[in-house]
Image (tube, rainbow, N blue to C red):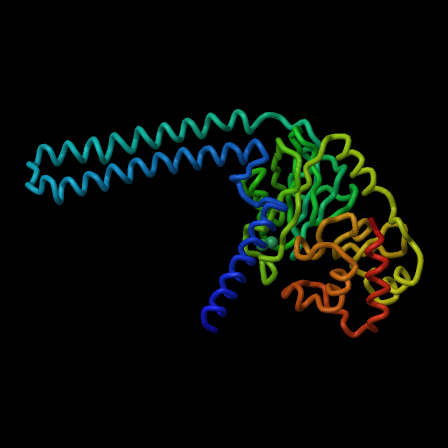
Length: 338
Ligand code: CUA
């Protein structure tokens, strides 16, 4: 009786976890099958065609093996064997692979259309994403990302229906920028700038991840891509360019006094650190800690108190030694910076 109850409870827990996982995916899809970009749609199509082709060929080969082993197990003469090798082993793969190659190359013309959207610089840091809007994307940025622009982090906004340019770089180790719902992966490599064009076709929020092992917190290096209409995009960039909404008060003072300002910038205040994410509009972002926790005063406080537990491997030290009241004041202030 009791074991049945325990089993039922286990089932209920498993279902709850599954529902949570599925709904959390639906919240911000991270799959090329829920494609919302031109390139992802092509990738998904290519996948289905290759899956169908692969399944058909597999079924044919298994059928042939069955035929040879069970239905007609007599030996073939050399002539038939040779013919099988020539047609099945040379001609058939050449034809199939060439067809796939030309079809794949044909996609390039669509994917290589010139960009007509904004240029956004994204630098892959350990272990978060530095984002800058309003940067110039000329040929001068071949080796280093453009500096300046309007700083943000871990959230990239894009206008729908436009071909936006993402300039990708990294100061130290190799990462990979991947938004499955929009496009394939592109590496962020120190010493060079890679160019990725994203053309979202549907508005919404999509999850991205780092797809190249880069260190301890590699798996906690997520981000969100928010696709909106062009006027909304422009309004967002304009809002991000403004100084912080609240530039004074206890939280702001404690932020500077406790050394947070050495790494973080909050524009409009004396905090102008460049090492960590710009926090000028941190509360306007959906997550903190690079896609790790939903933004709230409580999650900001938890992050400050014990970064090492919340995100093992993170570069920011834990500030658990500060009095709770100070952590709360800082978190309250940051929570107002929309
Ligand atoms: Cu950055 Cu993995």
